Length: 468
Image (cartoon, rainbow, N blue to C red; front, side, top):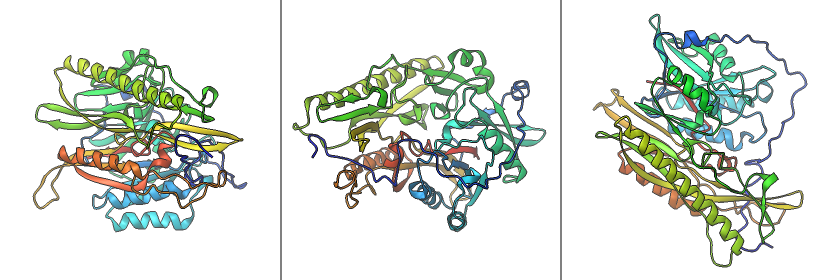
């Protein structure tokens, strides 16, 4: 039925590419809340709050958002959260799940998440944002950055919302109201400020002496004007030359195997629209900063029987992405020299994959890169150990461990659904890299292909708002 590449379809219950609006109970009661926003003068008074590091400090409070766009049901989203809670055990962590009232989870699911957290020495809290205009996206990382400072003898954490945020607007402000009302962290006062700079959280990486920010959706003029006030450290702006490539469905490329091919990764002046998809900060090695960069490569079986135009398309995606990442790498090295920061770069696999579906009688193929950079990292001094020491820890997604869906038949074609077990070699390679850098490695074994299908992964799904 299909020529060339193997047909790879994710089971439809795991991930839906097109946004949908789930059914809503008719008796939904909306709350009216007044946002209390700190002014820029107060936010930047004397010493601006310090942005939370992307790597230093133990991750104490992690925030997630159950999406209102119908992209996921409890499977795989809640199953992912269950595993993460179980794996990050024994650290007195707080896991917070934001949810809109009309999309409430079944009571048994809420109780299970609470139970899992308690059994593993942590805490789980559900926070309902029952405001009619709230839109929750699964990529909570993009909605805000957290910063902190002491105010009147009390620690204060600010949730800094991007100035150009329109999709999930007001989510951090409403969240601050709830977290203070419920005194979820009584020792910390939370505040909200809407930045004068447009950015997306997944496009910002915070190091010790510098901040990396990508070009996509970053308002460069305002970054130049207000960046020092908001971010308080040396800013490194990273961009690439414009990349010509296949686009979304309106600009899909039809190949000789009758598939309409799309790719969402490129944005104007930036490869892989968020830095956290191909860059990870790894802490220090002596006097050098460790930076781990994604290495694009083919992540599926390919032989000479594939049509020539399909092979050309694959080559274009791989080569364009490699060249653009090389530009980022050279740009990064050059700018860090200005502040006398020496770096050591390591590479981790960035496999190109594809997901198929047949919709409205058309064969559609979406290309994407599955990211091992999109991980959770923490470096901290653990004085609770018998022999206190510095702990270096990373949590990695996996794409080839629990990713064989061939026992499920696709109704549209009568063919088995996809098997991505060939990606296990990349799962293993990424683990070995981090172990070689001295990190304890935790691997989430549930399949992250359903999230990669929508162009994100572990780091995108979470937002750390408090580190020790």
